Length: 146
Image (cartoon, rainbow, N blue to C red; front, side, top):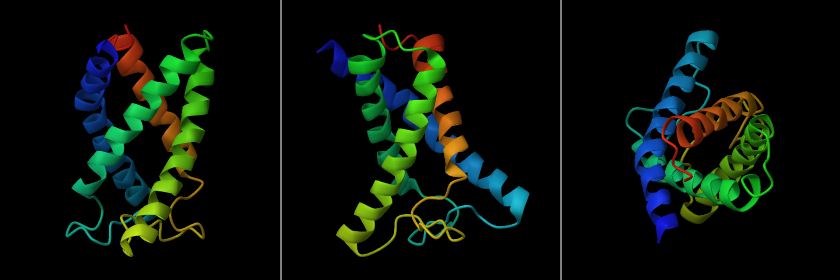
């Protein structure tokens, strides 16, 4: 029961922060290149979508499970945690875009400049930053793993 409480706290606190970070990263990409890094075809705003909030909640749950079952018992260093979670996030983002497209027939998001369509390689450092933010918030600032 305490794990459900911890997961709930993380989803309520960290998922919206990561969603806002996603918006900020897309905005920075736009400022740097003059194009959006990814767009949301079904959103009236085009450069962000509220539909991705549940995905961030699911991401937080997956990251929490990896932390509790793998990183914490093995005393994995913070740097290794961030590197692994970042790569895992890129894979999950691609899988999420692929699954959403093939299940619903529409796109949740598209990386227009990428041949991969659901992700681009520029997302790797973005996901490493997201992983660092998760680690800082959950382990250092809010102590949500104990």
